[in-house]
Length: 203
Ligand SMILES: [Zn+2]
Image (cartoon, rainbow, N blue to C red):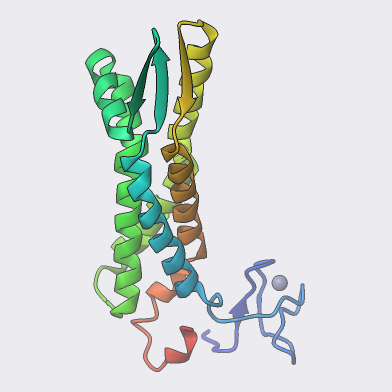
């Protein structure tokens, strides 16, 4: 059975025919075939997160005072100095703070460009990529967690003072914006290149 007038409600997940005023028959949320302004919001969040990733990687993320001398570390130089002592921890920090954010931004860029150019190839792969990025989202704060954990451990033995640098703020904001970009993308837009005459579904 294929009916064109059936719509899913994103609020209560009821699938039905909208009432006379175009609302969900169960919870009265206004229904749309595609989430409103999904593409614009997703692009905006992604571009903002790319911009924020620049200061996040160039500015110091940690400032350590040791024996009266001040030492600043960016994410990368911090990983390098961690790597000389503890390679597994350096690997975790590298994956959480450089590899994962970079891959997420790259995947979202690919998905949004594929929607823009109405690409029809590799739909399954793209849906899988979106699911992976969605799943990875919940681990994105791992790096800030590692930093704050280190901070509390280091501060306990009073040998050195440790504070977060300005990059931590930019990094956190970039991570949140990438999660919002994933969240705001209506995955149904990926299918629209296959449908003909559905140009009115995209906004
Ligand atoms: Zn509803």
